[in-house]
Image (cartoon, rainbow, N blue to C red; front, side):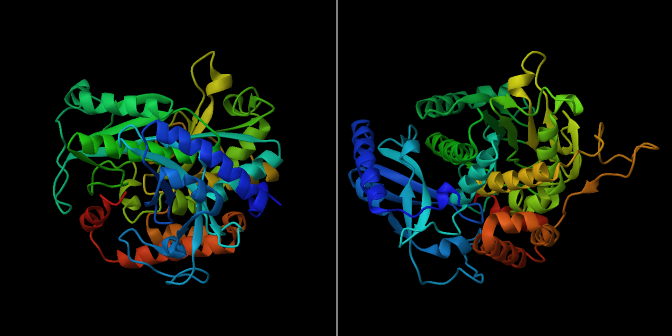
Length: 466
C-alpha cells in the first residue's frame, strides 16, 4: 500500500500538533494573523478556508471541516453529483501541509498552506486530488523513479472593471515587447519580490503574445510541490495585480478567437540521480526508460486532454498555429507538437533535458494534471513503449510523401475529450473509482451547461473564474 494511504493515528496527530505549534510561532512572528488553506476542485477552481494562526495547531491535528460537495462544483459554482459524491450530506477534514506554510508577501497579515483532505475517521478522502498526485509520485518512487516537474503560468492582465466587461489591457505594446514590461514595471517588480520572499525560484518572466498577457516559469520540483507552487504563483500574481489596480485571468480563452493561456507542464524522469531524458541511445539522447515514459504520455494524450485542458473554453485555445499543441505528436523544440522535447543548450543537457506537455492550460487542476501524466508515463515504462517518428515541422501541414500518416488532432470538443478519458484504463485505475467518477461527472455537467453557447459566450462566462 502506498504510504499516502495510511490512516491518521493518535501519535500522528500529536506529532502534527507539535510541528504546528512551531510553525504557528514562526508565522505569527512574521506578522501572519491568519492562514489560508487551499485546495483545487475538479473544475480547476482554487477554494479556500482560513484559520487564525494561533489555531493552526488544532487545524493540523484535527483538520478543518469542509463539505465534500466541492468535489462536484462546476466552474459557475453550481453543482452536480456522481455515483459517490454530491449533495449536502457529509464532512471532510482539511489537513495543512506545514512544510509549505509561508507568509504571503502580497497579502500582509496572511500565510498560506495547501491541504490534503481526509474523512472524519482519519482515512484519506478518495476524491482528494492532492493525495492522488502524491500517490502517483510514490508509485514512481517505488519503481526507483524520481519525477521533476514545473508548470509555466500564463495570465492576461486587465484594468479592473465590472465582471461582465471585456478585458482592457493595462498597457499597449508588441508581443514579447519591452514596452509592455515598462508599462507594468512596478507591478512585475513587486511580483518577483513577493515570489522571492515566499521561496519560489523564478526562472523567467516575460510578456507573451496576446494583449496584456505575461508568462512566468519556475524551477522544477517533485510533482506535488510543483502543483503547490503553481497554486501559490497564481494567487500571488492575482494578489500583486490587485494591489496595482489590475485583475487577471488564467483562463484558457480570455477572448474567443485570440491566443489563450497555457498551463504547460515540464517534466523529466530521473533514476539514481541521472536524467533519463539524456545520455541514452534513443532520439536526441533519450534513454530507453525515458523514451518509454514519454511514449506512455504521448499514447494517453487524448485522454489526458480531459484532465489538462478541461475547461469549457479549452477547445477555443487548443487550435493549430497558436503554439497550443493541438496535435498528438512529439518533436524536438517543436512548439506546435503537444509533446515538445527540450534538450537544453550544449553542455547542460544532463540537467536541463525535459519534455513539455503543451496542450495543458490554466483551467486544469495541477494536482490532477501531474498525477495523470505520471500514471501515463509509468504505463508506458512498464510496457516498454517507443516513440513514433518525430514530427519535425508544422503538424497541421500536409505530411511529406513517405513520412507516414498525418498526426492525430487532439479532441476538439469537451464531449470528445471526455469519451477518450472514459476509455482510458490507465487513468481509471490510477485515479480510483471515486475520483474518476466524480471528475467525469463534473466534466459532463459543464459540457451540458455550455451546450449550444457561442464561443464568445463561453469565454465571457469563464474568463474570471480561473
